Length: 286
Image (cartoon, rainbow, N blue to C red; front, side):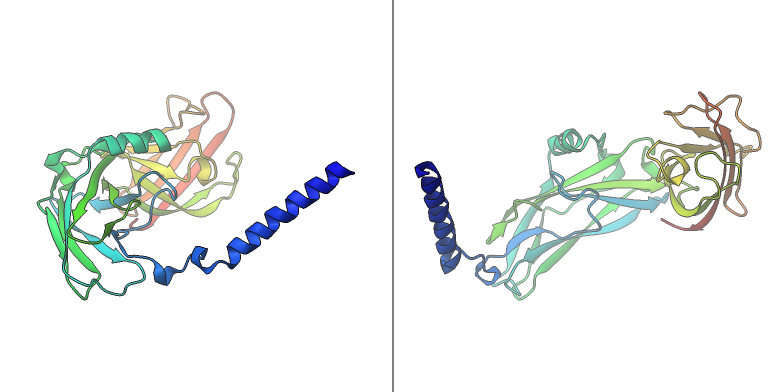
């Protein structure tokens, strides 16, 4: 009985202590009492929320040059910068890409200097404003489409204010789109295994100059990787699905029609009896 009484008393003291803390105004988080931070503004949707560094995917047509604007922000409860703030910029070390790869189980590589032009060492957030921007010029027609390339950027320092600890480094995963990249209407035949009469939108994402990957994966349903490679001369389509395998020789009916931008694909599982009949019709750019 005494043991129970002691436990009850201890619990009462803990609850009382917590209640007192919550009533203490000095411990309440009031955004108005916070400070602004200097950080990179989001250039797009973060690829993986909660990742060690924010990574953004940027894709461009295969052209000689394209300009991308990156913005630095004075973010927080204050509505404007109280003075001119010089923000110093640089490329982040390649080690941040290695950290990201390790934490997120990815395989990104540092973008070669021949793929871009970045000459901005600093920007100024003017007094009375909250943002300053700079441009990076990318050269998509020089990209190695078989690699996942990343340009890491870093806020080195600022003349005043607090540099963010979360968004002082960003990773730009910049890629080029081949001729088959885009959003497609994906359908399967009534006789297709697992997912007959499927009819959904999917993405075909550039893997190389002639190969695209299906996203979502197998049958626009499963995570199994599926790719389609177009022979630019014959327009024949070759399928890969590493997890299931593909029977060879592959079906000669698999073709790409450049006029209608349509894939018509027939294939069979390499280590089973499943058959797949797929049609992908281009709808718009990704």
